[in-house]
Amino acid sequence: MSKGSPEQIKWLKSVVAQGLARLIVLGLPGRPAEEMTKQVATVWVEALLFKFPDWDEKLDRKRLEKAFLRLCCECDKFPSPKMLFDVLSPREVIALPVPPPRTPEQQAESARRWRELRLLLGQARLKK
Image (cartoon, rainbow, N blue to C red; front, side):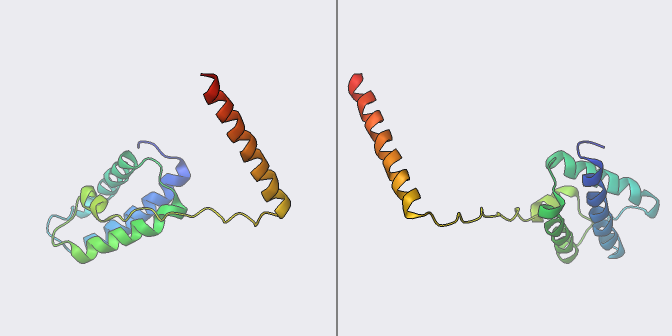
């Protein structure tokens, strides 16, 4: 197995196993033989870790599960890992928390510092 911590690989293996099981149950042409399903799952996990080595369960579990469901809905033959990558949505962007409002004193201090910085930069430009 390529990169990934044991915890990372555990949840990823679980999601891949469940997704592949759904696809196999559909009986799509090109599905692996029953005795090969474990090896197929291993190859899929390796492909996922090779393409995106930094999987994070909190950020990626739901989008990976949805991608497997999309494959179930859209495929008319057994998919490859590339097809999963093609339907995998981007990670949700998590916004930074809004900073607390600044007091008038903090605003005045910030304005003073900016004035000092502009003065310093202006003096440096004149010295050239």
